[in-house]
Amino acid sequence: MTKTVNGNYIHCVNNAEFNGVLIVGVVHGDEPQGEYLIKQYLLKNKDSRIAFIPSLNPDGKQLGTRVNANGVDLNRNFPTKNWVLSDKNEFFGGEFPACETETQFLINIVEELRPKLILTLHAPFKVVNYDGDARFAAQMISDIIKYPVEESIGYETPGSFGTWAGLEKRIPTITLELDENISVEELENPVFEIFKKLENYDKIDFSALEINRN
Ligand SMILES: [Zn+2]
Image: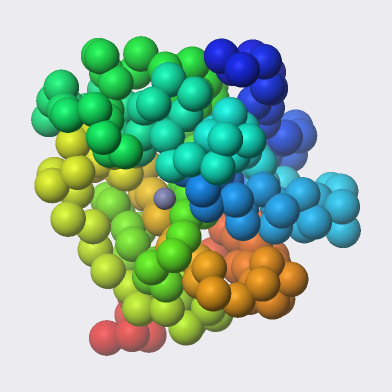
């Protein structure tokens, strides 16, 4: 657990049966859907083998801003090779790579848990974006939620989590952009179905899936 600038706490929920999947909500404070969905899912699935960070950016959520309390876009603050000092707008990547507590927290969790797949929950673009070797997992998610799959443009977003985790650390990473024009309650069905599928991620034979698709 880590304390933020504004005194909120960031935590990761996981148990000893960890199945290799890490799901992260509220990277951007004005995209609150992930926290609600994760909390509701955990209420109904107390034995989940997935690791969850319900809200990475509680200060931003409290303030209703994309950025955190320091005005930093966490999704531009990761220590990628292409990190740059950018203008101080809502995409500001911080004074230096990983300068933010929230960024450091997620880096530490990834290095500690060594996940095999990471899913971050965003809004509002209705797309399943992926970085690294996550095409089939992205397709599986797309089949459920009916948003198109798009391979990430990666290096056009310096300091992004997808570039850091997916391309540089080679952990398959998916950015699920949810629909913000429907209620979070309406998102429960498809998102819970995705989480349920990911409960057995360590048992899915993706090589067989690839053969079937060819
Ligand atoms: Zn976002």
